[in-house]
Image (tube, rainbow, N blue to C red; front, side, top):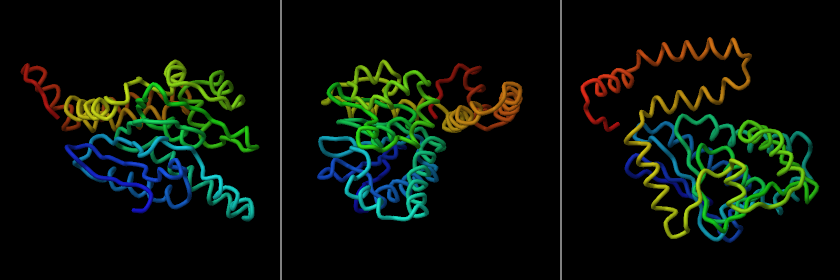
Length: 257
């Protein structure tokens, strides 16, 4: 692939944004490559978690502005198709059957911050900046706001998206965008260790079902959500993973998934 790299090692899928000379800015081809990589890793039964990282000083600077300028000459239908292309990537990550972890080694801005927002976990270096800066160039963070409202709530979303201001990693942590802040020299090893822990201590099936339920129940009425939850509870009891896990617990055996 031209703009990303991806591989598998010890049950972890690794996806690396590899356009450092453009601060890993997103264009149509890069988004296509990301969609392909996530699809391949999702189908790989040996993969239980995926780490999304980047090369260079920035994690991702958002949309490639040269490409965005070109899109201004396109028809509405062409721009809608391009917008749907990004929507499909963010939705794919948000609903992926595998846990996705963002390893943020540098600034994550606009669409790049959107990528971080839809991951299940995010770990950042102290010096990284985060922000949804679209309003400063007359654009809007249209797609990411749908996900961000679910993640951190309306008040915090208005603060970030209407101001367009950058926030520090510490502020991003307080806002709920980042789970933890790690020194740069330890970032890769600690994120990989965290992914390994998920793979070894948690059922991949249980994580998948839990993640899918989190995505689905928020749009349901309360009674519908509770009925769905009860059905999934009953269904999961019949799974091989549940039988294995409960059996090992009762036998006081240490379980490695």
